[in-house]
Length: 156
Image 1 (cartoon, rainbow, N blue to C red):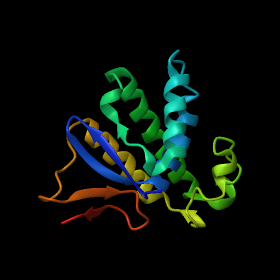
Image 2: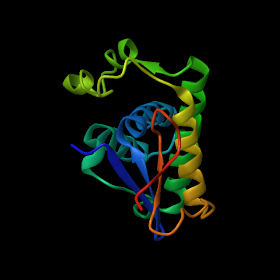
Image 3: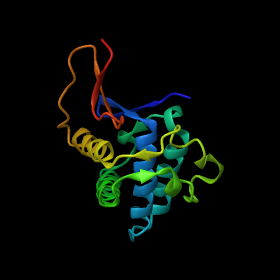
């Protein structure tokens, strides 16, 4: 299984560390469950599916209409805020997440703790990408968000 997930919108893209994206999307699905939108169950299901698939599936923001994309981004930002307030996510917490079922054991790829800062930076990158405001990476390279070290350049 790959550790990277392409996140694509309107011809622009970056790579995300699958663990960070998974943690962020599980929390975003929980935030969204508090949303009164009738179509939320479908979007929440999409988030949980992406969290479980990891690097096996691209996140195509173009697949969401504007309203759903904005709700998704709101939920991702709020999820990052909540995770930051908790000081990150640790293995003990993840092991109790019912969304992961039997996948909880390997979900963090051996990490004991996922710091909040890379998750916040990943949420900001998702918002910037959707706003067409993500700074371009140097030629032949791509941004890589959500790594334990924070944003990195990949390729080239």
